[in-house]
Every structure is written in structure tokens, then in C-alpha cells.
Amino acid sequence: MSVRTEDVADLVIRSRRAVLPEGEGPAAVAVRRGRIAGLHPYDAVLEAAEQVDLGDTALLPGLVDTHVHVNEPGRTHWEGFASATRAAAAGGVTTIVDMPLNSLPPTVNVAALAGKRSAAAGQCLVDVGFWGGAVPGNVKDLRPLHEAGVHGFKCFLSPSGVAEFPPLDVDGLRAAMVEIASFDGLLIVHAEDPALLAEPAGPGYAEFLDSRPGRSERRAVELVAALAGETGVRAHILHVSSALCLEPLARARREGVRITAETCPHYLTLTAEEVPRGATEFKCCPPIRTSANREQLWQGLADAVLSCVVSDHSPSTPDLKVPDFAAAWGGISSLQLGLTAVWTEASRRGHGLGQVVRWMAANPAALAGLDGKGAIAVGNDADLVAFDPDAGHTVDAAALHHRNPGTPYHGRTLRGVVRATWLRGRVVGDTPGGEFLRPSPAGARSPGPERTAEDSGPERTTEDPGPERTTEDPGPERTTEERPSP
Image (cartoon, rainbow, N blue to C red; front, side):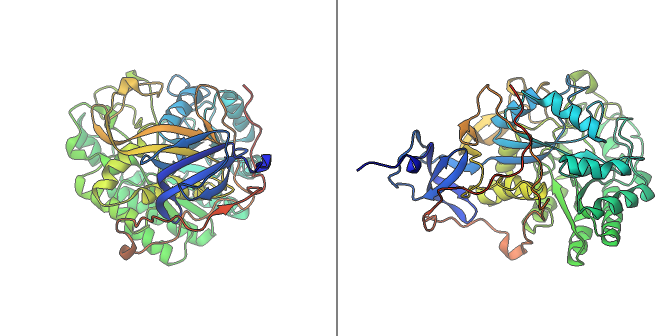
């Protein structure tokens, strides 16, 4: 019996631990023309040009990291698109969204966005989207940036660390919110109240931590929530490090404010108590806090007060990481390590791979308006990751693909190893194949429904992935920019 050419998949990947939206279990994923064309039983007889059987190695959707500082152009010696996207793929990340600052010029107008895209062209091993910036005096640039395809707008309420990206005061924040709400855009906020920040009283970590107290985050979150309620804008709080933020975030959501929040692997993994003397690779803003605070952040994830876990990968050259916490550059280098760092801690607390995928793939994709990303589902891009959740590895900073090797994870043993990464059904290798992304026409969405504490325990798995689903046409094309030319 002959098989119709249109029934032959380009690729079939089988796994006994496929992480699907409805649960974890055995499945065979058929890929055609870069999209997921069908989900089948693990042992289904399928025709394909290539067959891969992962056995007990888990199959995850490619992760979506919406908080990455690439720094090109202008500070490419800190991190560039070639090195960042290679590190991303090695860590199971198939989509990054680049932050608007630390590059020169920052992405605060359409010309700067065009410069970003030009700098990235032909270098990207994974897909790339871009945030715009909201800074004093650029309200007139926000709508043109939105129309040019940015996923939203980042602002600071306290100094950013670079002079070319100054913070907004209260009036500037309100004006930006009013403008962004007028086209239903998204504002993402570095939320620390500058009135409660101080210069560290000494070079040690304790002095640095005291200089950026958790109440500065809480007060800034309360301000953003109040103004978001007043203006109707969609707002997202970046890199929550303090558990003091959880209560005002939960209250604002109950009151109908359109506000979400994220945290980062370093806040869920590292603690203030373990920072070695002079180890400024641990320095970031807001800072890594106590172990008790860390456990409350995990509960905030379980309760869906925090919806996303993203890297805030913000590297620098080694000379800026002087052994003085008052003087060193603040930023964690971790893009390649987020999945294994989070899985190490999540699995200890009884969370399953499905929950990690929700926090690190599905919800960030929803936040940035990336239809077709973040889930193994028919019609989605075939962005997939072979992940061995039971293998261990010890981090060697020099072996990472980041442009500069410093990382607080050096020497730490983490659980889980990425065995392979596919972008639209092709194994990511050395040939750039990433595309520039734009948000879907419907824009960003709330990243996942609220979950109650009763629903926050270990995930259930399923031995039956449900009825077979196939499609001859895996959905309409989604909006992307031109593929970067090689």
C-alpha cells in the first residue's frame, strides 16, 4: 500500500515523557514544514523522513525567555546575538526577547530598533523578539515602536545603571501608561522605589543587600498597580526578588488590575547566606535575598501570583565584576542554565516538568504575544527540547557559550541535561536559522490562569496522551519579520 506524500512527516520524535499541555506521558510528535502536524500514541506506526526515539528522555517545548540583555550593538563585547543565541539553544531556549538597554543606542525609537535588527541579522540560532524602551521624553515614539513590532515597553523606576536609559518619575510613568493603554500595549517595569535605595555602606554583600531592601520593591509594585488600575494599561513586574511583593500583586489581581509578574532562576536557586566574600558574579538588582524569602517566592509561583520564570541574563566583561559589591556591575549571567537550575529546585519541592514548562515556556509566550510558541500542540512551531531530567552536571563557567564566562553557578551541580534542541523541526547547530518575531495581531495575553494553593502540588501524569490529533494544514502563518539573512 502506497503512502501519500502529504501524509509523510518530515520528522517524528517519540518520548515516553512528552510534556503536553494536558499532562506528561508517552507520545509521538509528527512535524511537517516546521510545524507540529500531529500528536499520536508513542508506538503509532508513522511514515517520516526522519524518526527519533528518545525513550525515557523527556520531550519539552522550546523555552521562551522574555528577559535577555544581548547588548549588541554597542556593547557586543559584553554579549552579542551569536553567543547569546548559541547559549540559549544549549539551554533549551528556542525564543528570546531582547531587552532595550545596554546596547548602544538603546531601543527607544524606530531607528534604534532597525539598528538592532540589522546587527542581529544572520547571527541568530534561535528566534528573537525585541522589547522597546519607555524613557523620559519618548512618549511620541511608543506607538511607532508598537507598530514596528516590539512586544512591549520596558521602563525603570530607579536608575538603570546606564546613563542612556534613565528612569521615569511618577508623571512620566503615568504618561507612558496612558499612551501604551491607548493601543493596548504592554508595559514591563523594573520596580524599585529610588527613595528607599541607598549607596552600600561597605564592599560586602550584606551592605549591598541592606542598600536595596525588599520594601523598595513592594512600594514600587504598589505604585505600578495603582496607576495600572487608573489607566487600564497592561503591566508586568520584572524580576521580583522580594516576597513582600506577593501580597500587593495578589490584591491588585483580585481587584481586576491587569498586572502580572515574573521571577528569575537566581532568586529561586541562590541565597544571600551562601554568597562568598567578594563574589560579585552574584550581584544583581534587585538582589538575591535570604533562603526564607526564596521559599516564599516558590509559594508565589505555586499560587500563580508569579507567572513566569525568565533569566534576566545580563552579563558584562570580567573587568566590571571587581570584588567590591558597591562598585561592581550588577547582572547575572545564566541564559544557558535556567532550565537546569529551576528544575533542580522545582523537583526537590515536588513540582513536575509540566509546571516548569508552564513557567518557562507557555506563560512567557503568552506574555509576549507569541502565538505558536511555548507548547507541544498541533499547529505550533516545532520548537522542541530533548531533556534528560535525571542526569546531573557540574557547571564549568569556561565551557558555557556566553561571551564572558563569569556566573554564580560555577562549580554547582545541577539536575537535568539538554540533549538536543530543535527549532521548527531542525536540530540547532552552527547555521543561523532564527527569525525575528513580532507579537500576534491580538497582542500579548495574560500569562496563564490563576491557580489556587490547592492546585499547586506535584503534577499528575498521564499514560494516555488522549485522542490522536492530526492536521493536514497546521494552522495559518503567524506574523514574523523576514528571516535574518545568512
